[in-house]
Length: 204
Image (tube, rainbow, N blue to C red; front, side, top):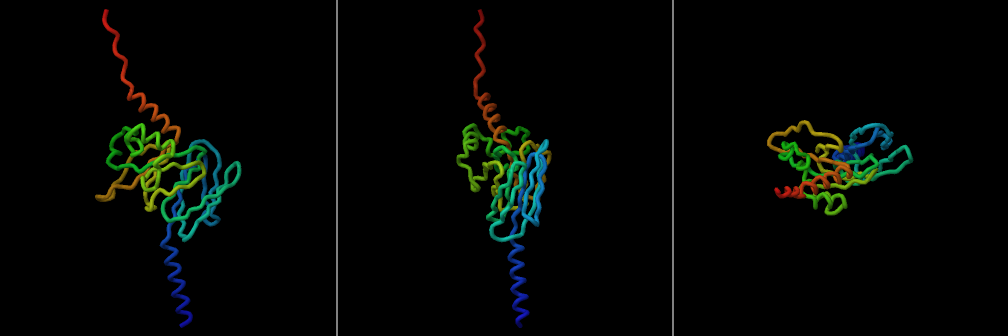
């Protein structure tokens, strides 16, 4: 009887732990590796960018050690869900991407963050940014929760979407990210579009 109680407790504990899922999406400049056993993300400088993911089935707070070329830090993952870790020495801005808008090739209109100059400026200044609003402002070497859905799709900065599959009648859950430099350039381009062209000189 004692053995059965212990075995039942072990099964319940294992089932509880297995229900937890923390998925870490790492976007890094150069090379990134995730050591799941030692809960460590190692970043090595290099050309281009690299993305990698890892899932952890654990309850409570998950602390990940971050090893960089110039030292170490750490991030705490306090909830279940999909997290974006910014391994680039630049702020990254992102938002939920409406699937229907993806069919338009104009990237300025691809995401909710690109509706107007005001909304872009708010994002650059980290205003009205929240998980509930589905927009994100991620500082270098910080992790931010993106979704409760660990199967959601992330499109990182400097990457173009070439295809997007729809699962039945349900739109895919996609989040598009840009560097803050890229967003500032888009603001200037949009401002230029609002300037009226000069009137032609009168005929003599």
